[in-house]
Length: 174
Image 1 (cartoon, rainbow, N blue to C red):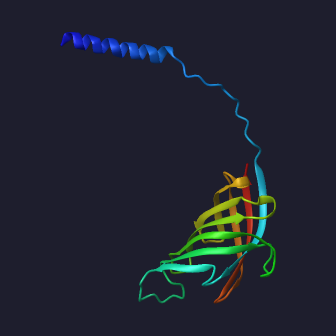
Image 2: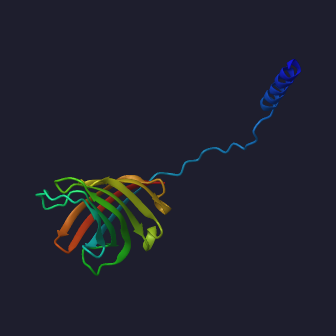
C-alpha cells in the first residue's frame, strides 16, 4: 500500500513538472480595431394586416374592454421600401414577432430588418425592445455585425388593413 502511495505522488509531481516546463505555443498578434462607423438609415415598412402580419396566438380573455387585444402574438414579414408609396423601391423586408402585452397598446418586439439590394445587400439589423418611440438595435450581420443603435419610428398610416411606418435608424457598427 505504501508503494502505491509513493508511486502516486511521483506521478503527480512528474505531471506538474511537465505542465510547468512546457509552454503553450502561440504567436501574439497586435490588436488593431476596425474604425467605428455611424450609419443613418431612412426607410418605410409597409404592413398589410392578414397578409404580412398574422396573429399566431391570442389569450382567451372575455373581460377585455380595450380595442387592443391583450396577450396577442403576431408574426410579421413586411416589405421595406424607400418611400411611403406602395410602388416605391423595395430594399428588403422586416421579419419578426410582436407581443401585445399591455392594456394601452404597448408591445414588445423582436424584428430583423433584412436588406437585399444596394450598399447593404445581405446585411441585417436586429431590433429587440418595447414598442415605444425608439427601439434598441441589438445586433446585426453582414456590414452591421456587432451593431448597436436606435431605431426611431413614426407611424404614417394606420387603418384596418394597412400600416405604413417611417423608420430613422442610427447604427453604430464596425
